[in-house]
Length: 352
Image 1 (cartoon, one colour):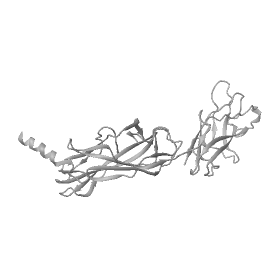
Image 2 (cartoon, helix red, strand yellow; image 1 turned 90 degrees about the vertical axis):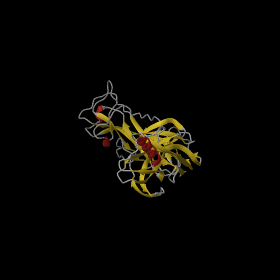
Image 3 (cartoon, rainbow, N blue to C red; image 1 turned 60 degrees about the horizontal axis):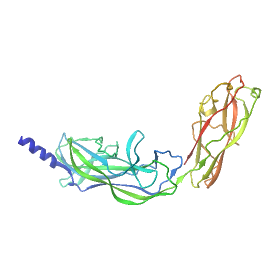
Image 4 (cartoon, one colour; image 1 turned 120 degrees about the vertical axis):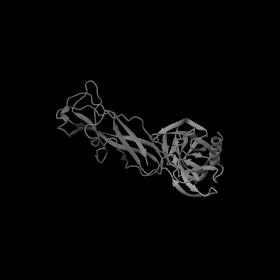
C-alpha cells in the first residue's frame, strides 16, 4: 500500500501547470476592416480563420515510454445567442463580441515538444493537424500523444485560432472595440487519465470595422408573357413571345469587386441546366411541349441555371443598377398543346 500511495504522489508531481514559462494561452483576432457581404446568411462565416497563436510551454511534464498526454480546453466567456453552431460539420460554442449580430468561435490543437531540465522548449515532436472546437465544457477530443521515448522533460503547448460568424443582422459600419486581457477559457493537461495544471486562455480583440457591402434587390419581379398561339412555334429549338425585364438593385455601395447573380428553376430544368430552359409550373391545364428560357438583354446569351453569372453593368460606383434579362417560350417537343404556361424562377445575388 505504501508503494502505491508513493507512486500516486510522484505522478502528480511529474506534470502540471506553473512549472513552464507560458502561464497563459494568448489569442488575438480582428484588426482593421473586415468586409462582409449583405448576402452572408445568418449562421454563416465572416472572414477567414485568424493566424494560429502558438505557445509551447504551458505545461512541463516528465514523461516515460507508455505515458499518455492530452490537453483539455474549456471556454468560460459569455455565450452569444445562439450559444452553439454547427459549421462545416463541426459544432462550436459561440461567444459574444460586443457587436449585435456578430459572434466569434475558436479552434485549437496541442503542440507536443521536448524540453531541458529547466522546462525550456527545445523542439516540436508532434503537432497534430486536426483542430478541436472550443466549447463551454472541457473537451478531451484533442489528439493525445502516446509517449514512446525514454524518461525525459516534455513541454506541451497550444495553437489556437479564431473566426467571426454572423448570428444576426450586422449594421453597416459596426465597430469592434479594442479590448485586451480578457480571460475566455481555461486549460488543463491530462496525464495518464489524471488532470493537472490550470492555465488561462487570454483573448485580445483588436479594433475592427465591418462595412456590410451589398445592394437591396427587389423581392418579387412578375413578368407578363402574354397570350400566344401554338402556331407561333416552328419546331424544337424555336422561341416565341420574348419579353424583356429587369432585376432592380438599389443602394449598391462603391468598391465591390463584382456583382454576381444566379437563377434557379423551382420546377426544374428541361435538359441540361446550362441550357437555361425552365419547366412550366405543374398543374391542371398546363401547356405541353414548351419551357421558358432566359438570356441576357442585348447579348442574347443564355443564362444557365444554378451557376454564378457576372453582372457586367456594375461599374464599381455607388448607385442603383438593373440586371437586364429576356424571357421567351422555347419549344422542347415536336408538338405544342395549348394551356397555361407559368414558371417560377428564384434569383440570388452575391458580391465579391
